[in-house]
Length: 314
Image (cartoon, rainbow, N blue to C red):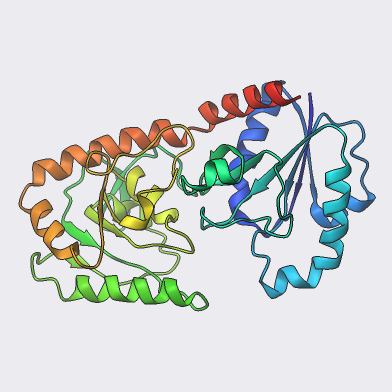
């Protein structure tokens, strides 16, 4: 089976799908080629069984508008492909349509962290998630002086972490993150709170291993890389409740109250009070969240689901 991925290389959320396609290629289940969307017009797709089309989802951005004349032509070429056509929608916000310009399309779609309402509305056949830079089950380190030393367990000496960038361009993201950060800074239920944002922190993995409760505000959508990194670190994912209706992990569903705890601005501090009064509950939820994450993020599991879907559609 020959699979062609036509992608915008500046759209970062496509990477999880690329990991999976390479997984299938290395096991000789598919022959896989990827090309830049800007090269698609001069590329012959005639010999392929499947074409996956992954343009940049931010149609309102200046970056996208500059290449729109070319994209309209590649849209036409993709839609004329006679074999199996699949859209890849990498929008950070899973409730939004990354192919709004193709109004009314019923083509099957793979979508990044879709809102559950969009699954049938947009004909989502599979969901992906944010591609992590930290591998699941990565070893945990502590520092002795300036040297990292492997440790099976580390004291969770930071009870609450809320180290977030406020962003520059997204007004909602900046406002909701600022409101959450203000709540945390005014919270007096713990003496161990860290709100100092450190961009590109080289010790981020070891830092997260020290965190008991990680506050996860929305990113460009309800979810973010921080949610995954929190689960991977076995910290408790304390997430804004906009995540509750999102299909966040490709291979399983997170259950609020069991695998993570959600909050809104009205109940945030009360929920923190309840959690910090029961450290054993925090440990249990963190452990369940980590186990769900390892299963739910798995490249191998999703790759085989993807392969089964190819066989079904071709």
